[in-house]
Picture 1: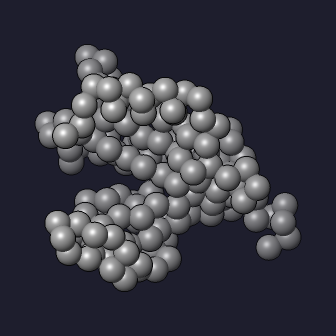
Picture 2: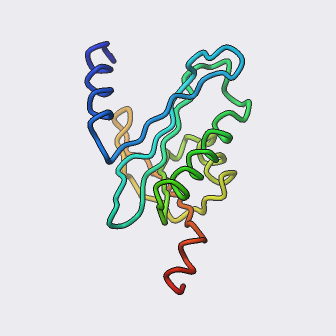
Length: 141
């Protein structure tokens, strides 16, 4: 069970961390909070970060909000944080996130076999990434 104290501890950790950038996703008409997007595990040395998207309000799922928020987050990571690579991983059963990653122009990099325990069963993690093409020319790639 996720408690109020756990939420407050998470918020404090995020506010104090340079390795996490978390943003609320709100309904544009009502300003109602429907989820979060984040860049986490930000590595200045490797110029990379992990993308996470959570749309927790069921009425807003499947309306393109995750895609719009993901595009904005990737743009923020590449343009404002000067990242070279943004990646994510998702359960083999999370078809919506797999489709979203591909819609965000991420490429599937591989599969972590039995990489996560869920409901007392090992499941695969599908890994995706997108490279900032603008940083490739500065590295003569």
